[in-house]
View 1 (cartoon, rainbow, N blue to C red):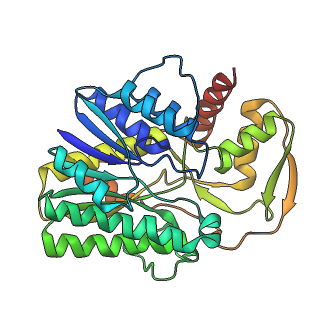
View 2 (view 1 turned 180 degrees about the vertical axis):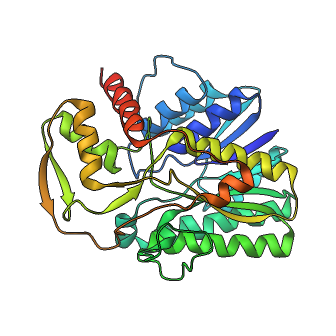
Length: 342
């Protein structure tokens, strides 16, 4: 099979590509190496995902990415330096390849930054997604997996969150763009018979996690003996999902789509295990053998108080079964973090 993966040099995307290549498939990776965080991290992700670890001399973003493209090209893997907002650029890629399925992970991520840059989030997360659906229509590609987010639930009072819950009250632009993607995706399914699964990811963590996300950020600050920003009283809670379980859920979604037609489904991918901010910090402290220095701050606008995934539907439909509890996941992450530092 030939899969087009958007955002394939990011955290989740690089792990997915690594898995797909290991399973013998061909992959087209589209990534724009956005300045949301250091592009060099995405270069490392890309090299790791394709199993290449050469000495990579850095000399500037454009040159480095061109070098990466030439270095990574193979019969089974093609990397494109491409923004999903550029429909003409995307079209040339679709023309050059036979594509069996699109797995759309690219997005501007983050609740708090979306409050500062709402129009840019709309451009990437809504218009960028529509560009891909338009091209799937034009090139008769009928299988599509899209990354949604647990943020669409907002401050849902019903726990755990189920796919049948009302999600008409997002509390950040990021969440609103993800909800929009689900709705627009259904339009393309209905009008053009594109089989589609929308995956609501619940707070993914693990090796290669973005450095701005809480677990990675806290681990780095605690290990350096610096203060961590601690919002609220520590009772906010998340359903943290280990990267291996997310990849397993995506792969099982791929298999389901390949074997079924007339599909439009929304699925929660979480651990179904709620961890408070206090518990998360304690787990990192124990794994590092160091105490955190907390800088107590007020709750931030757009932050939800609790997330918890009801994964009954994902278990029944695709056989999703998360296998990494939080304590073991944190130990694995910290081991990776310490190896990376040395």
